[in-house]
Each structure stands twice: as structure tokens, then as C-alpha cells.
Image (cartoon, rainbow, N blue to C red; front, top):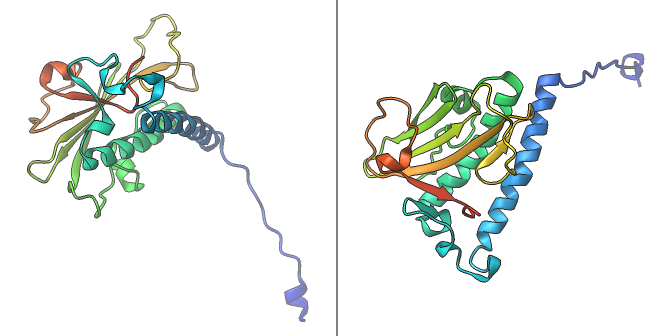
Length: 210
């Protein structure tokens, strides 16, 4: 063995940055929450002893288990994308652009060649406390998608709601109101969508409101 091979190599190991560590904490906590939702959704037909489709749903709301398989797949991808967007919002103080999420391969913003619904054009719209991620299909007949996030208004008292499918808490304590919507033949958005139910959108749940 040569002296060069026996020479000790010095490797510097740096700890992750505070921002990266914060984002990882957010991702881990939200993975747990989303996992619980999906387990409850899978068992919702027997959860509570009643059919989930009959409990607490308004006319514009439905459970994802009652939708076509392609929409179920997109819904799951949306939850993953929301997880990443919230992690960046906690770490950077702002919502990431859809193009930035797509560049990192984060679904559903990145193009998936196996998706039979075809590619989507995604757009981020932020208007005060209202955040829209809107996806318009390139394939005729595929539905449009909307992720609606409402942040707390400046000066509003802390929201004491429990974290659930519609309530996500950032690490700074802010409570987000989050909802996922789908609509067939949706027109191009002319501005921020604040009340999707008034524009023909359908709200999707994994479990449903309690």
C-alpha cells in the first residue's frame, strides 16, 4: 500500500442551514398530518358508523373517494405540492412560484408524462391574504384545479382552530385555511378566486368537515 493511499483524508461536514432545517421540520409534521387524513379517507365508509358521503357536506362539497381515479391521483399530488409550498412559506416568508416548484420536480406542478390527464399550466396569484394556485389543463376535457389558501388578516386575533384537513399551522403560529377545488371547463381566471363555490367549483375532501 502506498503512502498516498494511507494518507488521512480530511472531510468537512457542515450542518444544514437554519432555513433548510426549518423546512424539513415543516415537511415532517405535515407528512404526518396528511398521512392521517389519507388513512381516515380510506376508512371513511365505516368511520363513525355512518357513510361518510352523508355527513356534513354542502352541495358544492364531495369526498375525493367519490371522484374518478384521475382526480384522486391529482388530489394526492396536490397534497404533496401543498406540503412543499407551506415548507417554503415557513422558511422564506413567501409563497413559491409554480414555475419554481415545477423546476424542482414537485407534483403536481412538474409535468408527469404518465398522467393521462395531460400537462397543466400552473399559476400563482397572491392578493393580500388570499393565495391561489390555479392549474389549467392543456388537454381538452380535463378539469381545472385550484388550491385556495387564506392567511390570517393583519391584526387579526390568533386562530385557535385545531389543525385538520382545512387548517394548517405554520411554524410562526399563523393558521392557514386551505381547500382544494376542481371544475370542468373552467374559464381562464381574471383575478383572485375568493369564493370558488360561487363560480361553479367543487371542493374536495379526503375525510370531510367535522
